[in-house]
Image 1 (cartoon, rainbow, N blue to C red):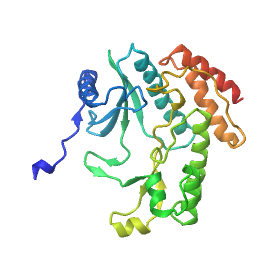
Image 2 (image 1 turned 60 degrees about the vertical axis):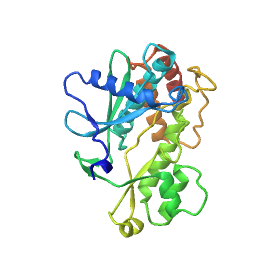
Image 3 (image 1 turned 180 degrees about the vertical axis):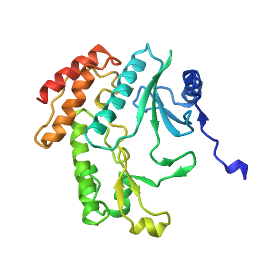
Image 4 (image 1 turned 135 degrees about the vertical axis):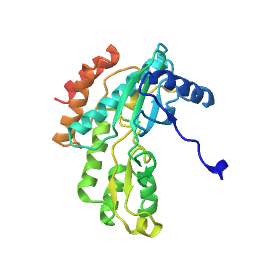
Length: 269
């Protein structure tokens, strides 16, 4: 039934993809509730890159506006954060920034796809918790520990989730909810999934969300914040310091963000 077949994602040309992205973003933006982007809801759409690989595309409001410039900074910080995580041995979504005359785009290769049509089964941390853990959800780390006790997740991967939670706190990620970490699921049938083990999917949506625009509260100032170093081990602190140091000299972000990043790097010395 062709009516039941979902539309294919738009294809991004190798030459001048910005014009195609701008057209797609304009179409998506027309469907969004007024103020949703300002409220921190990151608009996005699916596409195929020039190599026919499935990608997820986030986009800013128009640059040159307060919200557009803030989301430009945050999207650049997200890509940089993924690069830092990869440099320190963590799997993170492969992403890059593309700038058009009107918007900033974060283009992320989908890790739940294999080639143009293949898929890998991925579940959010919250779904894994609901399926295998009886206790109330607290955070990524407590769920990871519970999954280890149930022999659903390996102890090394639980340790990684502990580190990621602490890293996120050190970089001001206030949005580490149960949908912002995911696990690969072994098996294809329901029986295989129910009895199979889980493994950690690449990190995504890791950025300083404390500075996202808020529809009710407005635009939070870039200001240093207090960090709790007592729960993070030396390697996690070093990773967070690396992020702040790189961000402080990142030419693609605003001077205000560079300045606060420099201060935060100093607090991790």
